[in-house]
Length: 502
Ligand code: MCA
Ligand code: AMP
Image (cartoon, protein in one colour):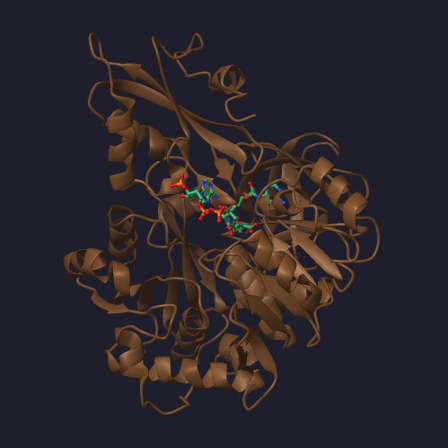
């Protein structure tokens, strides 16, 4: 089949007057209208001189149009490169430059800020608002409602998603058509998605969870999505009686549990609640069941691999576990040399299958570090596996903080802190946070005789780091705890500042 991704997810719905999107104002978008909009964007994008394989960096607000740009990229063979809307221009600059993007697509209010970034990197700039405005909309105006789909194969690159590294800068995970399509098929089947499903969608669409897991699965099944701009508990509760399924990070569930309106009646129309991107506390799982009668289905994945494991649809959804390997995903728990550990022992999760990415964009040495020659990808997640295959994640080998489902690499924050006036060195740790799972604490050592101004530092970080990465607590200490090898003892810091947010 030519262009399997476009034809399967989008083209299969050509001419369909079924509802694809329910928008916050109550308006609906049919599949046919969505595909016509995507085709017009396809004309607009290729009219700019972009051709298959070119990278399109998008930092735009969630909307039906934003998703139509994703469809347009699939139809034209352009490589979709979504970026967190919280990133500062300094952060976007790196992604655009590293990917060699041909186009930067910004929200109209950020157009000016990103114009410089685009120009510096030799990329074009267009804008797209969440209200049907922007220069790309102007270009799409009056274009034909169909576009001749550009042939692509399973192995062709469909998207690049940047994921932070433990050392150095972010790496662009290259995802092929096969990676995305195989995982969508497995998930739609495993979670029994059909064209009668209506997914409550309040996740961002610049990450795997909201874009590939939620949207691709819905598209494959021909279902509908209630497409909300962000998590707003009032909106979730208002729309829930019209939905059949919801996907969220654990914060979705803890916030719902905080609301007395969460009852069996409210959720009576729902058939499935799915959680992922960060650990769901077993307590949250149990509380949700007690309040609603629904057992949340937890699954586990990564940007590089899409989804790897899932609790079962039928059968035991075990709190505190991420379930069993999905069909087609080989999973093993290994020591650092790549040898499987004894059953029940802790090791690193390694996975292999059609879901596993092609490698990191133009970083062969980083790819070789994480992807074994035999095809197994080293996830860096520490886990055990039960006799009946259930995986329990017990920690992360990588120095990663996950706040509200967003990944934060301490090193990046430490470098930003170290660059501030009066700072000698710093250490950044994640500690328990009741709403976000983990919250960021920055521990600073002053240069001799200096007294760093924490307000000035906080303001300065705002210029370079996305807000979600910035420490919610900053403290100054005389010295960082170190072991005899001189290594900073982060476990000790996590203990000392463990109750910062609780
Ligand atoms: C917002 N803020 C955050 C976060 N989100 N701080 C830390 N961590 C966060 N995740 C900050 C804002 O900058 C702001 O700061 C304040 O919190 C409130 O902002 P607001 O926009 O109102 O936040 P929110 O709407 O309450 O958002 C929290 C959220 C959201 C619902 C948890 O971050 C979210 O939707 N997260 C989902 C992320 C996701 O999709 N992850 C999937 C990655 P201030 O007011 O102080 O200036 S894909 C993945 O991980 C893999 C592959 C997988 O398995 O799925
Ligand atoms: P990302 O780099 O955004 O792709 O995030 C992937 C990481 O999120 C994984 O390596 C895990 O550490 C974490 N993750 C995803 N789902 C789960 C889950 N259900 N439980 C625990 N951690 C998870």
